[in-house]
Image 1 (tube, one colour):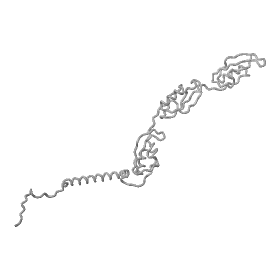
Image 2 (cartoon, helix red, strand yellow):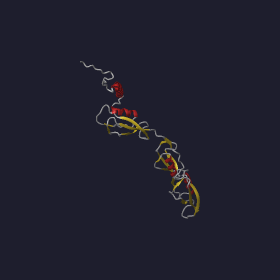
Image 3 (cartoon, helix red, strand yellow):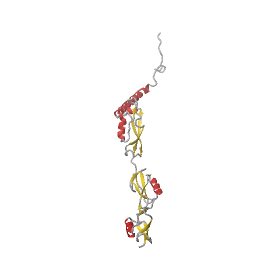
Image 4 (cartoon, one colour):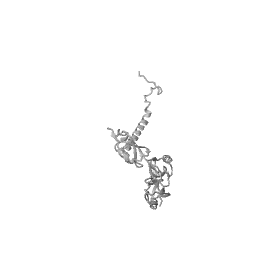
Length: 263
C-alpha cells in the first residue's frame, strides 16, 4: 500500500537559503563603482604626471637632488618633476645673496641622493625692508653707535675727517649719507671729527716783521702780541722768536706771538 505523505506546507522542511544572498548584489555594485572611480582617478593622475611621485609608477635607484638656488619656484618644480621628486615651499627667508622671489634655501641639499617620490623643501628669498640711515651728525661716537644698532644697522670701521665746526670725537658724517635707504643689517660707517685741519707753522725767525705778518695771514694764521727786545748782533725789525715754534701743527686762525728786535 503506497505511503501517502501528509506533510502540510507548514510542516515541510525549509529550503536552504544563504543568509547573505540579499546583500550580494549591492556589494558587487559598490565594488564596481569603486573600481571605476579609482581607475579614472589614476588615469587623471597619470596624465598630470603625478603617478610616479606617489610611488605608484616607476621604481628604481635613488636620484640626485639638483640645486634649486636662485631659481623661480615654477622652474624648480619643473626640474624636480623631471627627476620624479616633489616640490614644496616651506617659508620665506631674508637672504641678500638671492633676488627676492627666488629660492634661497633647500632641503635636502644639492647633490643629496634620495628615493623617487621624495619631497624637496625650499625657502624663497623675500624683499628686504629698507630703512633710511639716521642723521647722527654732532653725536658722540657712543650715542651714534647706540642709535645705529637700534635702527637695525651694523657699524663699520670708523673714519676720521677734519672739521672746523664739529668738536673732535663727534660724528661729522656717515657712509652712506643720512637718509639713504639701506636694508636691515646693512653696514654704516661713522666719520668722526678730528677737529680743524692743521698744518705746520712756517718758520718766521730771521724774517722782517712785516714779511712774517704777510706770510702768516696768507696761510690762514694770525699775528698775536709782538714783543720787542734788543739784540746788538741782529738787525732791527727782525723776528727773533715765535710761539708756537716753527713746524708745530696748527689749525687755521691760530695766533702766533712774535719777538722782534728793535730798530
